[in-house]
Image 1 (cartoon, one colour):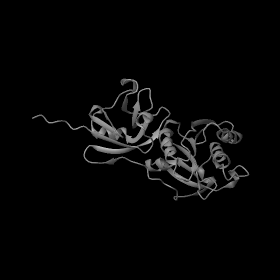
Image 2 (cartoon, rainbow, N blue to C red):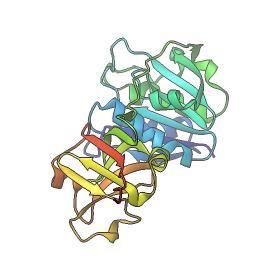
Image 3 (cartoon, rainbow, N blue to C red):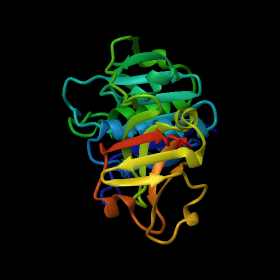
Image 4 (cartoon, rainbow, N blue to C red):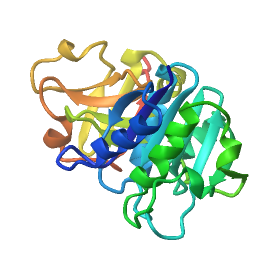
Length: 268
């Protein structure tokens, strides 16, 4: 049984996600559809790219990931199907696969052009239903991506935000995602933090708040206290125990985060 995941900014107030599932199941009734997330910030391509990057590796090899964050729907942007080391990807050509390109996950890409695989008529406003869903369903029935169009090496790649070194033992990163609990997920990886030193020898500064040391769990702090932790996605997070760090600090996506190794004071 093939798995298809859906990552969109459609939310749950409208029937858009349900329609995509209906199309998929009409073509491939044995497929298992997983709702990865439908609450991506509207039209936020980079946020969706980051979430897909965090999630794809936890699915079985061969999973088909459909990502529809599509502010250019109906315009000149292309549609893509891609094969990767771990899975396949169906998405608009707007940079939503940028993290996967940067990591080397994606190995081959085709521009989707074979209209016989589309739902008819094709709406100018809902390619998620009429192009991406049916292509994913036909892919789940077997075969490779080459039947959907021609191989291409021309596709949109956004600049993936990476931390910058600001001197010895200092990194400056940014908040890439605010989760439902108000945790601030940054682009500073656990590996980069490890190079700076021990957990307790790290300081994290965001806005006007400096946090000393990293916590091993959320409950190590008093309720409402702000701390830093290496989160499940493998990146540094700023959190508030049983509160929203985003609300308490008044920050969101794009906020700068400074991570540095504390200097040991010299004894005289």
